Image 1 (cartoon, rainbow, N blue to C red):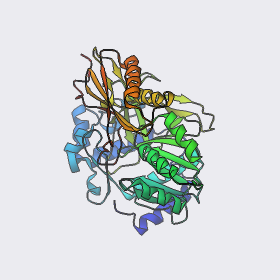
Image 2 (cartoon, rainbow, N blue to C red):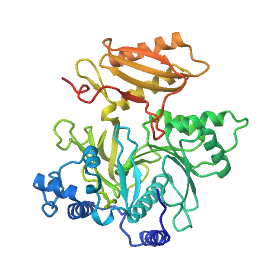
Image 3 (spheres, rainbow, N blue to C red):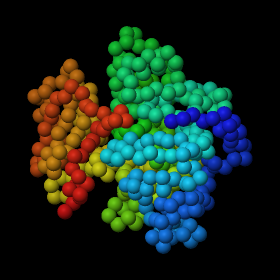
Image 4 (tube, rainbow, N blue to C red):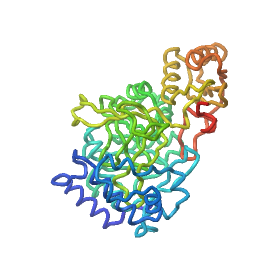
Length: 439
């Protein structure tokens, strides 16, 4: 991804100063005016959305309330991939920064965003981290990912970000951590686990000086993050973000996922009817990106399952919407004989609890559904793992969750393959979506 130019960096610094005063980008307010702005931009600037809205009989001027917004059709990744440049605002074609969604759904989408998009993204991120992590202007962040931000700081003055390509050996990340001494580490959960084992081999382990670790891009359990927090001696908080919609939610120190309303407007839709789910009920996460007006994402189907609530959190954040459940990818649900479906989040928690409660020496795992009646647990074993005894424990445990109608096999493997983006998928279904639906 290309870097922000000098003019854009000056604009970022000026906007940062403005937002510290009368600016309203991250202010607590109703976001409907932002949604309408994106609708008009998409309709007037892209062939894709104009045709899509016209076919649905919807014009942005008719969307005057949140209820009206329900008439706007949802958008899928398949549609955007097929549309190509027709989904990009004409005036921005060829000038934008390009990031790439990881393709864990099996499809890769190039996401285009302007300088303004990234300036707003950076300011929203800083405010979210200040509020929920206590990020300070002098704190240095080390960002381990497959693609870097197009900037390294705000005005060269603060909130500095260094990049580490996470496809490189984890030993290099450990060296970088010990050399640069950042205050905040942003990292995939699976890479954080590998980093922990690498650092444990050091004797004695030097003080790391981390004030916070942010896990991102992969699903992880709270119990796992608590273990990481004990090792790194700092809070470990999870961020739910996507290339298409940006930051959707960030955990505070109390474990609550606060929606980042300035970045995207989130909805929960019933998986069967497409109607809004009842408050607190899980459904498909659909989002409208309020920042990216170069390649609009309007009512975009994220293919994740979750539930939204509202709470007053002990962290002191203003009462607002929260992500009360994050159950994982729709295509990672397991479907049992008879049609019962189990969310990947429940499967992940069950597996991790089993490893902790039975003290199984398992360095890494992947739970894979290969057929309606067969599940395989791939295990990278530690030195204390006892294959015969521990495999029996695993099978007995999953029999309670999955029923006797499902065969559970345990296979020892030397390593578990990552995706092209370097992600580890702890829960995976090989069933096609149509086969995974109840009959």
